[in-house]
Amino acid sequence: MQAVTRTLKVELGERSYPIHIGAGVLSRSDLILPCLKQKKVVVVTNVTVAPLYLESLRSTLEKAEISMIPVVLPDGEQYKTWETLNLIFDGLLGARCERGTTLVALGGGVIGDMGGFAAACYQRGMPFIQVPTTLLSQVDSSVGGKTAINHPLGKNMIGAFYQPQLVLADIATLDTLPDRELKAGLAEVIKYGLIRDPEFFAWLEGNLEKLLVRNKEVLAYAVHRSCANKAEVVAADEHERGERALLNLGHTFGHAIEAGLGYGEWLHGEAVAAGTLIAAQLSQDLGWIDEASVRRIEELFHRAGLPVTGPVLGVDRYLDLMSHDKKVQDGKLRLVLLRGIGQAVVSDQASAAQIGRAIEARCTR
Ligand code: NAD
Ligand code: GLY
Image (cartoon, rainbow, N blue to C red; front, side, top):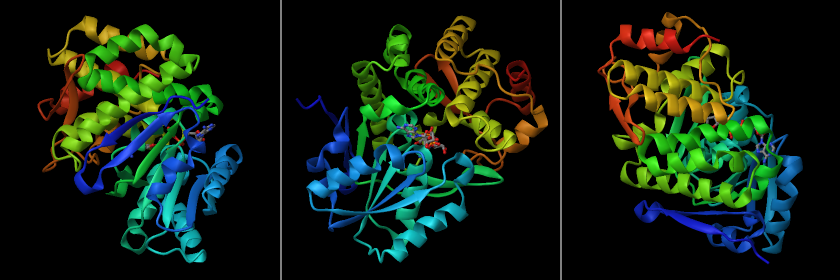
């Protein structure tokens, strides 16, 4: 019997695309086939994911008489670089891929972001499909078309907005995900509750343990609800001129942690969790959110096994790293802060001193 597949649509006019969520969707050639223009696809993946899922994808494609050229990259955030990106171009050119060949990104957010950026650049744009295999990539990075690589001076600094043709989120792939990665993904799930969906936040408080033991129905619901939130935000503000910036709650502080410690030391979701607590602290200091709400947020991240304090890098170092943030406008730092659970705002009202005090209070590791 075929497991339930939930389908959503990201509404972007002629660039609209479906997100299919469910256990086993990776074997559904009928979902992939309508997107393909050629009998050949390139699959970008990494050395960890390839032994787990490349053959399943190959047999799905073979059922539809599609051949596959794999490009297998090293694994890790530290490889989200120009050098690794070039390996994708080497593979595409070596296999004589054309503008109409489809690139499939099979893996977590690192593979999705790099594969998507390569697709945006190759011959000025080739079609691509996201097959996210981590919780974080299923609920966030595979949806919305942000693609990028890192620069030593800042995370995701070189990239493009480039939408996929399809997102295929197979919940069954989460079975093999290490616990630490599952927890990191929960940080982005909790984010949706915090920025715009207070009922979902309350649902997460009630269902966290089921998520941690990977109950498939509960996971599928959380992925679906997260993607529904993200799809609405992206449809309203694809290029982040307004509302989309709210999806970066905790990220300005989090990116500083990731860059400050060296990419790969803390997982993205871990850094976002600690960053969210710094943002919540600052919101409380500004009188925008009460202490009880901050405690509720801290409790949920803590139960999810995520850090609720950041590393001691020094306030000046944090502020320097944060000055590279993409939300900086006219040299002024804009932060995503909270006016309550489910109500985020972008604000430039916090002074450097206030930001520094929140960092000091929340960065004690
Ligand atoms: P990741 O891609 O590094 O994957 C985490 C680890 O899990 C890796 O070692 C990977 O090989 C492994 N893995 C992947 N799938 C697996 C599976 N099913 N079973 C076992 N192991 C598996 O990290 P991530 O958390 O998925 O993504 C983080 C990246 O996403 C960061 O670079 C971040 O900047 C980016 N991101 C992008 C967006 C966006 O909108 N584009 C949003 C959020 C995060
Ligand atoms: N992950 C933030 C965004 O997609 O805008």
